[in-house]
Structure formats: structure tokens, C-alpha cells
Image (cartoon, rainbow, N blue to C red; front, side, top):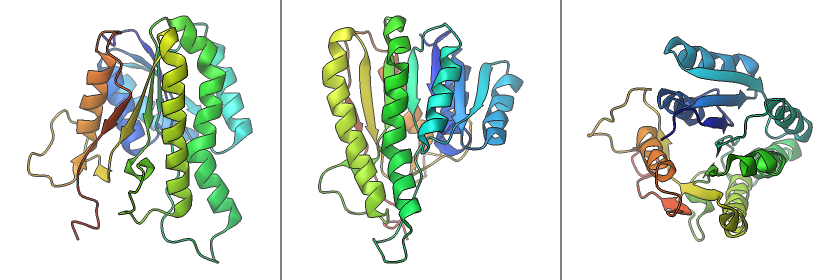
Length: 241
């Protein structure tokens, strides 16, 4: 179902972004992935290409508008439509709002977790429309759920994720008539332990592989099946300490 699909993944240089890039490539998709550091993106590409998969690496700081614009222009140089857009990049910031917080950290957290994903999606919409059967997969986080507070995440991170949730809900409404599915994923704290295809059944923290398996399920459903949100229940790291 995913063979020969063209996929764009943000935050593909490490953690879940890297893992989902590898797992998508194993399904036969071509993966265009970006990371803030080009070397990180290239490292992911080396894993994929070492397994016989197809991938290209790009440098993109999703928090910087000019960098996002340049990344989109590079992607559009390839005339093939984008079939799947995975919005995985987000800068982590923790702790309460304090006098010692820098303006730059707060702005960067919101831009990376929200604004950059919006502007990239806008830039790629023509390509997604040309796919005829496109999907947008957004890693929102449980921090985007109303009334949820059980996290050490910074208020700016919460704000970005609430904004991302609203963005996904609005885009779902507007793009569904065009046949473009938008799905928001709301996991709690989780870990990526390896790129293996199995999950330790004794693990207490949600595993990134389970998120990917859910994402693959969403992607491989008939176009008549539009799952607009997936919520995961599980403990946070604080709960386990």
C-alpha cells in the first residue's frame, strides 16, 4: 500500500522522526527527510540506503521561516507529487514559565512546534493535491489535549501543541472534501528503543513502534476511512519515577 509513495518527514534526523523515516522506507516508500543538522539527516539516509531503500536528506530548521521556504523549494524541484507529509519536528522545552527564560527559546519552541509545520504544509499543498490520495500525519502530543497538565513541558510547548491540534482539526474540515486526509496523533511520553520491528511487551512506557503501527494502519485504510485523531493512553515519565 505504501510502495512507491513519496513521503516528506520533518525532524527525520533522530528519535521518532528517524525511526518513522526508516520504517516508511521499509514499506517501499521514497522518503525525503529533513533535520536541523544536515549530517543528522544524512545519517538517517545512510540507514535507509544501507537497507536498499530510497531517501534524500535536507537541512531545514523548522523554526526558521527562510529555512522552511528553502526546504519547500527544494522539494518542489522534484515534480512528483507528495503523497504523505509527516510533521514530526518540534523543539522540546520544559519547566515552568520563568524570568530566566529567553525570548529566543520561547519563540523557537512555538515556531518549531507549530508555525513551521503550518508554513510547510501551505507550501506543499499544491503537491499534495496533485497526489490525488494524500495524507498529512501530525505528531501533536498529549500536551495538545484540553485540560491535560501532567507534564514537565514548558507552557510554550503546551501552547504550540494546542495550536497544532487546532490546525489539524481545521485542516481536516477543509481538506476532506478534496480527498486529503489529516490525522493528528496525541501520544504521551514515549520512547524509541530501536529500529527493530518488535516491541518489548514488558515495557511500561509507550513505544514509538506502536505509534508507527497505528500510523501505518491509518495510512493503509481505504480512502473512505478518514481517521482524524488518534489518542494514546499511558503513563508519563514522572508517573514511572
